[in-house]
Image (cartoon, rainbow, N blue to C red; front, side, top):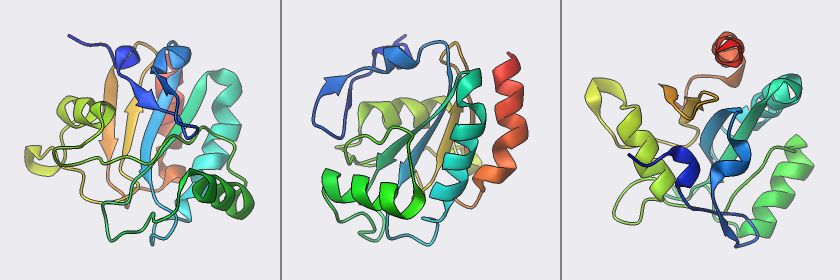
Length: 161
């Protein structure tokens, strides 16, 4: 079976890499958008990241324009928006698809490892979140309506594993 750390991802700068640099860390992987009703979750995601980064926690944002065209910008526009509006310092990657034939391999993997409601694999909207432990196991999938603040106990538990 492929490890999550072997899956190629594209950085916001266009470089292909893997998640191996995050091996041994707890990851919260999120499909994001700048013009979504859930966009204010960037604030909570950044707060979680800042609070737990020193303990080996990272938030990884993957912008996606598949839901209501709510991420229309290019990589520079997305980075600037997140930085200036929400003071985001956690890593943001290249804009991707999370569903369909062009879905990014990382999200194909995540959707299979942690199915949604009634066993569905498809991502329903922006700000779907996946919590991954230090060994690369997907622990949980959270709906877009699940706030970052409500994940704090799960993050703390994952950091103890």
